[in-house]
Length: 321
Image: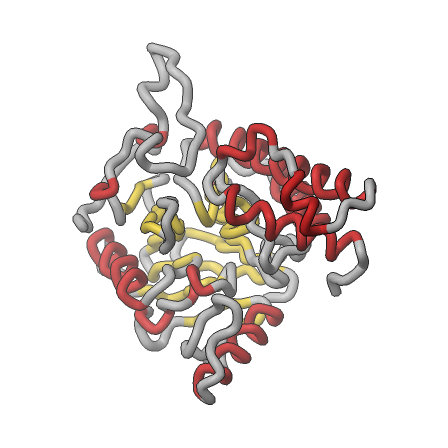
């Protein structure tokens, strides 16, 4: 795969938009987007010093796992890693092609393995920021791996969170070079410890797995109704650019539209499962009856729809703690 850096104004995510007025391709599928599989992994320039890195998530359906990195004169801040050591090394190498500044901070926004399993590829000495819930999950996973009990549901395997990691249960702000960086917890959403990263000077907000761009709401570890509240908070921040943890990096206006579209998708999925639950439909039958409407064509709908039904039923039955 080519690891060339693709410098774009982010209209790469549009199909001839502008003077000709053609529509944005609303999909997480690279082929439908008009891209080639060989275009990935790739680095996209969001602003003068803020970039995203997109590589493919493992699995039959092709869609991206997306990271953000912020380059300053005093070092680099990275939000999330990739799903293997080789893929995260690709991210690290891509950063080296952009800047000679070292990686100083890595924010673990999601504890899932597709964002953490490659963390061993980050340089020694970086400072990690992580929510206490995510740290506990990764610590248990690392312990299980050491004792041969296997990982914890797709989390970060044998990688151990360093003892000096900064725990962020609410908000943590720091300055690096000219940029102030805000790391904060909007509430339980895709996981119990989702963190977001803001570059306030430029009104950029990286939401990691709180925002899945054109990807069906994945709820294996989710808190459905709380996820809606987290999205309410994200929209209220009125960022110029919202960056998703999965799905393509968008231009500013399109990113805002897609965040709203994802919010509506999550609402629709919860509403459909709730409808079936209120009718007394057993969960296994509800999985067969669920009508996802327009969201049935979204990436991962076939695999994640049944999981969403079960998780929403659990929440409605008071089983989520």
